[in-house]
Image (cartoon, rainbow, N blue to C red; front, side, top):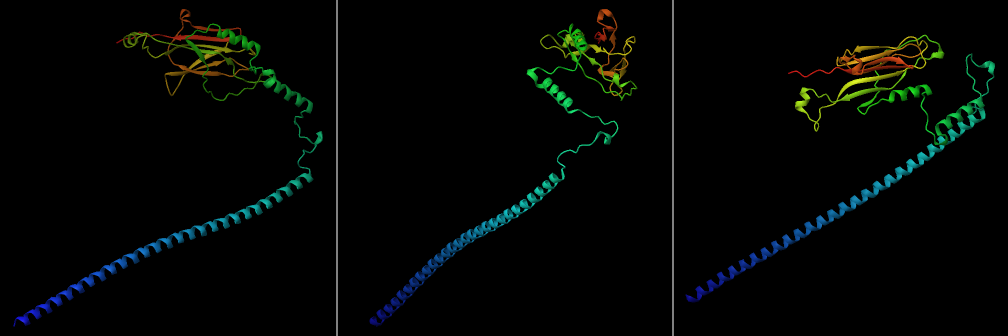
Length: 305
């Protein structure tokens, strides 16, 4: 009985060993299969990347070839078009040259329209030479269009100019004016030299709110108008002035000057305040030496609470 038991045990142990060997073989095969699958996937990925790169390179080469062909075609087309245009332009120029249209034709005087002004060539060249000398000759400054009499008037107007005064030349637009004078007395605007007087007004309010280190804003305190009328036809008539309030803003007004032919009326936009008509306050209204002077200052009001 003992010998039989031992044989069975041996058989069982052998069977178990065989099973374990089979399991190990199966595990080894599975690991080999997994390794093979991984290698195949890596190979497929590498091949796919290489194929993609090759395709991209091929596409770029194809695009470059197509672009080069298009450029060649365009160059050829442009060359052909430019050659055609050049030939047509040359042909048209030759046709105009042979027909004589490049030089003006000489017309006799009897075929000119009545009233046509004929300029002599020598006279025209002299006029051009004089104009060039006036502008560029010898580095001299171009003189203004004022006459000697007007220059004297301007110096007279500038003589008593103070430091708190500035030149004032803001003209206002007037309606179109029509005149029936001769061409000898061509209508024109008069020349002028005007000044505006500004300063601080030290009333009670400004004295309480400002000082010399922090002064109040400057205000317009008066004007001085000097209008030049050297070429008046009727010098017995004195030029007149008229104050017209602005319809859009009552704080301003138009000061209009009229004198007569050949001078047009002229107007300036000024501050609309009450004037001081006292001679001691600087008021002046006179026409002397062909200069119409109108100087005035505004009234000063005391501050009341």
